[in-house]
Length: 115
Image (cartoon, rainbow, N blue to C red):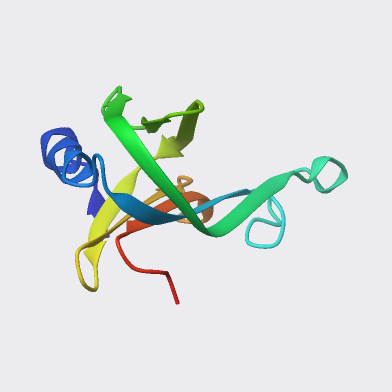
């Protein structure tokens, strides 16, 4: 993965607009991130949710980014993203890592179901 390049990622996000896509969205300070306060573990996980979005936007300050996808019923977003890559078959994978490289958030978008 490499640091987010906002113009490139924005262009890739826009390539998924008005298409049925599958997303994986995960945020954690639990299983992958035992370094956080153990008394306050939180996390969210959704895989192969089929959505269609009409608008996509990535914003940030050069260190941490938020990607939002506007669906018919509302928004899906991931905050704290730091890195991205194109994963097999034009899948966009974005992730957030802390200063020690540990995963904190992931957003994966694909036109085919994720394995």
